[in-house]
Image 1 (cartoon, one colour):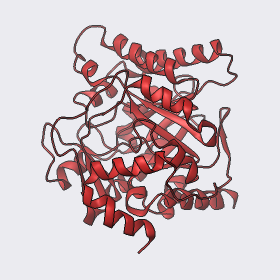
Image 2 (image 1 turned 180 degrees about the vertical axis):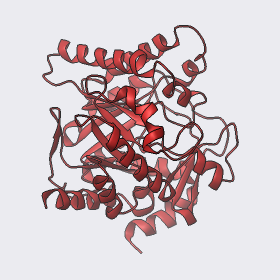
Image 3 (image 1 turned 120 degrees about the horizontal axis):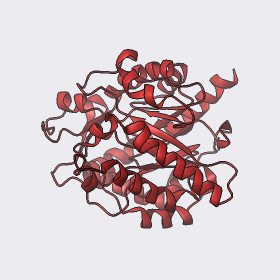
Image 4 (image 1 turned 180 degrees about the horizontal axis):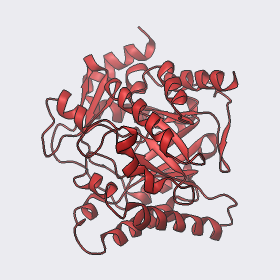
Length: 359
């Protein structure tokens, strides 16, 4: 058993998934992480450089607590969040997380717990921002999403996203709009809404570019959209079904790319005894990988060649990171694999991708 495996079994797992993860983040915030030389495999997209192609997915560190740790483990980039305009406790139902050990999976219905952008921005400003490419995963507040049927809802969403990027753009290399989480009621409905591309994404990108121009930045941060792993009927994506969602966004002047995929409602209902029809949560980890791989293949056929594609979902070994790259991903993110295999998996994946792309 590896040193991480022993630590996980002896200390983290017995605490339960939420408390164990909080302790892991505390350790990383103090720099208590296995230091590893960063794989040098720089990748540049539209003027934004990633030191290597393996990073940490959103959700692992929602509040910018572990930036020192991400630098120590050699991550090429890290996506922080989801970040909200104001603090939010998240889902009140308990439990909110569970390990599915036999499946090497994690179920969660956390529901966007956030310290709020003001506190997160201060932590980012104090952190080792230049050690890796920092991304910020952003979303409208759950209380705002509840008003989705009211007039001028899209304007309120844009106003919140504009507030988030205003406080974060000085430090972020890329932003990810997250309307694909399964843990905020009504959120995916906004993603599938008729005006999502032109009423929400386009104004947000325009605001981001205006802020960059005001700040004298030659290159604005990238703006990406995070996709769910399944359609509205919870069936895995096929090229034909994904086209309705990606097609309106498939232009580099509208958004800079995509992150695929988020956690799965269908897997949660199938595999977690805690899932409820009105609060199913989502599953990540090994069972999600086939959905992530299929989504990446479909996305690669639909996205514009000038749009960045980040693959995420169930990467538990370097071979799976390579499979996502072969399917069309430019970069790969990890979360559940780090929980089950340890943070060294980030460097292992970076090294494997570097060897493949150089070869």
